[in-house]
Length: 271
Ligand code: IPD
Image 1 (cartoon, rainbow, N blue to C red):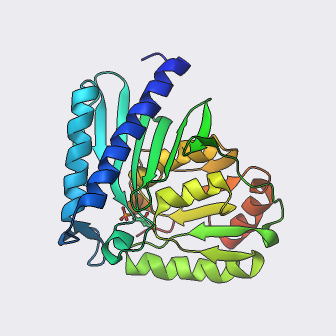
Image 2: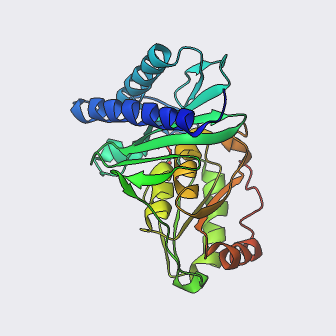
């Protein structure tokens, strides 16, 4: 695979096409039935998660048969082309379950462990975020830019909590040190959309411990292409290690990094 911009745009367009198809499929589904739980009893897999990932895997196999795949619900294929797709069929499954319109299809393309293109489609509203490395990011075709706030005390942070009770306790303790130092905290419930919010400026930064590559891959390239600074685990690092994913608007990143370092955010939280 060469990394000509034309190729990266093709990867982005493929991600957008399949994410939009999948979002339409999710919108038209009439069931919210939970078929299993994963990392804990509050980590649901719905019938629609599985169906949506099957659709994505089938379409990628048709359109990009030599590419690899890693999907949240277990689809895996080795890459023969150098490109691998990192896929979350529904990020924000609990919101989907409750009918809160903040859940998304997230599809990213990675080369040599680096995300080079991606799309996140809010499946409830149809809003499309996408980016290719070096090409900028857009929301429904309009260019995105992060905010320009520099002072952490004026910054709105998004975060999220694990499905593991012990890690949640540690996350709550961290919050007691961070919350007094920032404008406020939001917990929306879909990491992929949190990263897109950093990109569009509806929050200034996002951090969370222990998310998996499929939660953040597409949002990462969208946020970076909008001017965000990111510190993320390797794509191959399992979420169970509790490493932090941190993304902040460029001007805010230096001072916020100091505040969060002091609070202990850049230490893994474990299980
Ligand atoms: C979850 C969401 C949530 C985050 C969790 C993730 P899922 O993904 O992104 O916002 O706090 O850590 O696991 O399970 O809905 O795909």
